Image 1 (cartoon, rainbow, N blue to C red):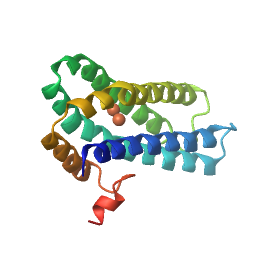
Image 2 (image 1 turned 135 degrees about the vertical axis):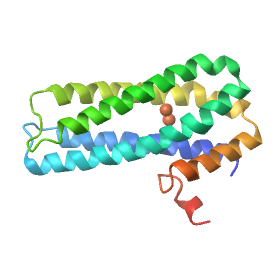
Image 3 (image 1 turned 90 degrees about the vertical axis):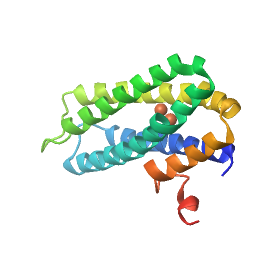
Image 4 (image 1 turned 90 degrees about the horizontal axis):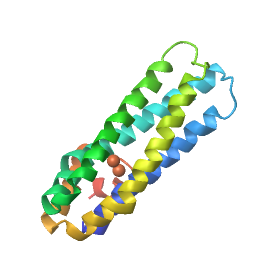
Length: 168
Ligand SMILES: [Fe+2]
Ligand SMILES: [Fe+2]
């Protein structure tokens, strides 16, 4: 896999996550929520947790360390992105906890959390694709991209964009 292919897989993860966001939005579109809708939201959120966790682990364990090694000036930006990963995980797990009750929380707290999550995730992806991925494309070495490829296989097998790799 060459470096644009590795980056394209990471970008495809972003597109999948944004599509998952749209699925949850559709479920939340008409409160109050029926019990069946709550199940759909839980399923969509669990899918989002899975999609995001593997992707973020590739970034945390492989892409970001390689970027810092090649471009030490990126350290501060990466630190911000890592903080955002923690915030995203925290909000997602709070949302899932809120939805674990027999009746979905319709008090509004979940919708506020969801709005925070939505805003943070979109901004996070914008930063990564608008700056960090472009810098990585310029700075990382061939071995770094092989490591990213291996990281994708290791941390996020079966995710969007990796199906063809799985069948190799
Ligand atoms: Fe990220
Ligand atoms: Fe990302």
